[in-house]
Amino acid sequence: MKSLLGRQTRLLSFLALVCFSANCIALPEQPNILLITADDLGFDDLSVHKNPLVSTPSLDQLAQQSVQFSDFSVTPVCATTRASLLTGRHFYKTGVSGVHGGRDYMRLEETLVSELLQKTGYATGTWGKWHIGKSEGYLPWDRGFDQAYYAELYRHQSSSGFFNGKSVKHDKWVSEVVTDYAIEFMQQHKQQPFFAYVSYLAPHEPWLAPEHFTQPYHDKGERPAIANLYGMISEMDFHIGRLLDYLDKSGLSDNTLVVFLSDNGPWWDSSNLGAMTKQEWLTRNPSKMNGNKGQSWQNGIRSPLFVRMGRHFKASTVNRYVNVMDITPTLLELTSTPNIGSAKQLDGESFVPFLKGQIDGENNRVSYIGSHDVISHKSKFNQWTPIDKVARSKMEFDSQLVGLRNEKYKLLLNPSIDRAGYPTPADNYVLLDMQSDPLERQNLYAKKPEVARKMKSQLQQAFLELRDGKTSFSPPVYLIGGDNPVSVINGFGPSSTGGNTLSKAHRLTGLKSAGDFAQYAVRILQENLYKIYIKQTNTDAAGLDFSLRLQGNIVQSQFSGELLQEVGSMMLQQGDATLNFEILANQSIKPWAEVTGLRRIILVPAEHKIDVAKWKLPD
Image 1 (cartoon, rainbow, N blue to C red):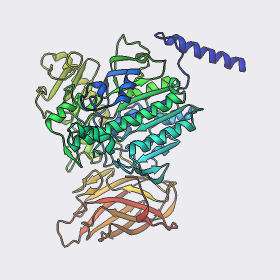
Image 2: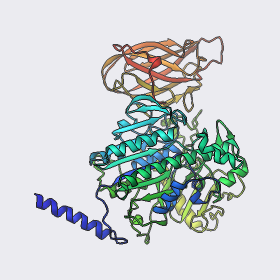
Image 3: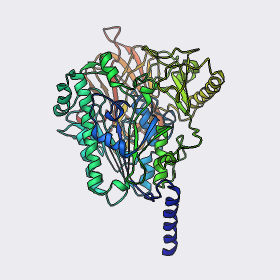
Image 4: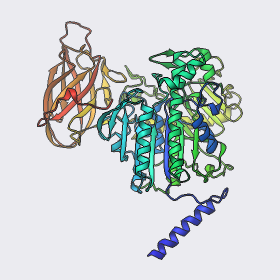
């Protein structure tokens, strides 16, 4: 047996040597992984990418040591990118279709790269922004991470959140906190392969950073908004330097794959300091790309991508097109990790050959560029409304803000045209040659009719497959009676709505007339008698009669003037079910009274004596 194992080991080593023709240095069989993401960092937000103001020495050095990808695309917003990053699948298929309002929940049936690596002996940890589920079953410690810090959004100073499910607070800035956790984790697990996913919240607004990082920009004469924006980037860069220094000093650099990217392009406004001026925006974007976060122009979806592993990958720049869905299959190939236990087909494709210097040949990647702003003609529909059967049936292809990308061409349908320098659409389409026109200035739709025709057909087919797919746009399924004694149903994350009901990012509103309703998909894990509470963000609903129906149980009550009120109890059996919340009558003296802040429906086993008002839950 030992002889057989020895022959297998020698064979694997020989194959690693043979396949790496550029340098002939054997790749580690199970390298460590340090995956680093920034939040709302633009491609041009680095000094290595010619930003004239920002200072990013750590990331500049990492870039110079890495394989850099000049044509790497993510998605227009954070949750959708993270869904594709961690699964290798198109985000719509994972159930994630937007940001907040229940649209940022990844299906329980999805398999994350963390789970696959965990099965092959990796220690797994993540710290910082999560944003692909915010209730039991969807949190990082439920999804293949041995250790996780779920940081509250967007508390940059005095970071708070949940560490492996327990509420914690810190007297430090969040970038420092997540870096401290990551370094301690790598120290604890340096004797075994580890997957460390460090997910910074910088530079997402509100723009705020420690004074010693903002002062250099104040000294240059920048306004507080700009000093804090660039201060956040410099602070993050400093802590990324700490991560890389740890790898060097611990001797782990040569055996650790370091991957750095951003989740989407830059944003131009901050809730605490206001918007950038036109000149500040131009200075921030020296490449002069069109677009911003939330849009499918390059400045909304082009991200840095740096990949380094000691001596094993020669520092270079790869000009081939790759996509965020390609990260997971690349990690699986580099770690010899099979996609076992997942029935889900990966949509991404490994780019290991590009890392090895094999950059010639065909690149057949085709990516469907989805939008968080899904368009449906259902009444009251917006970017947070659940995509139920009615909404799905009213999703017309010609109305969507979508696109298709291959290595040479990019086709956009109904792109946002809000500044000078954007190409004029033809028939609502823009066709771009990304090799000869990477700044997206010329619409070739009329000049390349055959290319346009073929890509339009591919785009429509992809749209129909995703719209009609069984898993696409799936709503949250709330777990009741799990390990947490307090089970939460987020009011803003229903599976279906009707009447005047209007979804918002963090609350449900519009409920004011008899028949207005919201439905919630639930899974009862433990048979029990549960007390039921309603939580609001304000008291404007006082006087509204409502009912809750679940598994034949009916609770009727009226909204009071309390933000949190107990409304009844139900005896529930194990199984999947639908909770129906419906307005029965409006007894308010104000005829326009409506639920402007339905935040949560909370269930607690009757035998538990818990002060629900003091119980901390992820937001």
